[in-house]
Length: 543
Image (cartoon, rainbow, N blue to C red):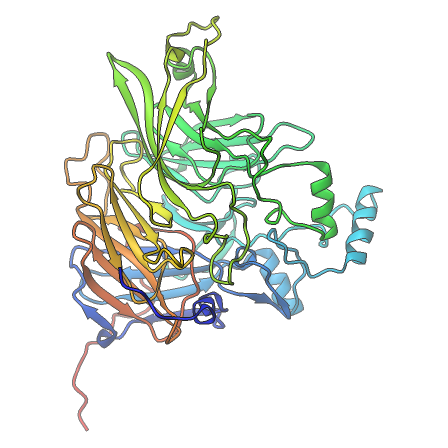
């Protein structure tokens, strides 16, 4: 793989603040190189922190930054419309008016003095001040953005999401989804069931003086509530992502989150933060949790249990899953095959070299396969205790340092071959993601695409854009396109590139005159949202 020559300082500038609150324009035709596919029609939404400071307070970690939503609209005629706007959370609005940071960040950014923290904590304990801004974590709304049934939601896993206007990206307000978000949070990740045509969301809250809570909701068209379930699973104090299959939800109990009263007091006093505390705790279990989607599944497959747990042989932390498929023999579900990006025992949330969110040089993300075998588990009757836990076999599938895996968005829970990830092509610098890896579990179609800068999360877009609902999709799994954000450290500008998802060849480059700060997650909708008039035609200047 090619070695990209840029310095740490140049790469770190990709997190710098986008100073303009909003940007809206048609990308000049001369800045679009190559050929945009005519059947690539719709809008790509992307979310990520857009600022590295609030007022005069420098952020300790990008995760504390406010969400900057970017929308790239593809009309299918060779033009591209660009739109970006900060999410106007209540906290951001208050801090902008005050011209200073008021609310602390979960990754350690604290605008308050130790003395102020002590005073606020004492007042809260004796009941003098129950809603102290000093003790409130800010809602950055910066992690993901997706659209379902007319609502564009900007999500951060510890707070309520914000509803946005899909055309202007203006913030409409916090969203409770009709009061169905009973934990008052919405997780950053979701899954889609193409057979039932449902959006599946998750919300999680850690437990201190109570058991942890995991709420999983299923919504149909018009946001019709199809299922609301809350599970109280001991040890499940963190969940960033989930998997969805025909019968199950799958999450991880991570050994990297330890919740204690002492930790909470340290957080409020500014001596530590939830991000600082994320590290390996040897005494904690590392497990996959397989949860029944319905009571019928619990009775018929899981022996009357709402969920089962399976120990992971080599402890790791999982932020992001790939996909899962159920194994069926003689009309019985006997196991699961799934993929995830795993971070090893040395992982922590150090903002390494001011370039990446964690210490990837010591604990790179590795695409890992898990084979879960139920054994006699699903033969148990309702009154029989299983004789043993399901077995888990764990295998690293590729040696490259990777993150942000993406699969076909309409094939969750199905037998898929391909996973697209941002990847490092330089083993000496695993925290610089400069490529996109297309991994084939069959081993035949694995490919790299090497950029000239730093890549973001790849978004796979199936040709035609829409899902095949209620039946097996007969189209080739990788028939489509991949859209990727690329930051150029040398010139401090951002491109968005379009790749052929089958060959991983570059089709088009959309060059911007400015930078878009590194992002987290995004999605594509085949619906087209364009603000303003039609694009100008390219004509020769007459002098």
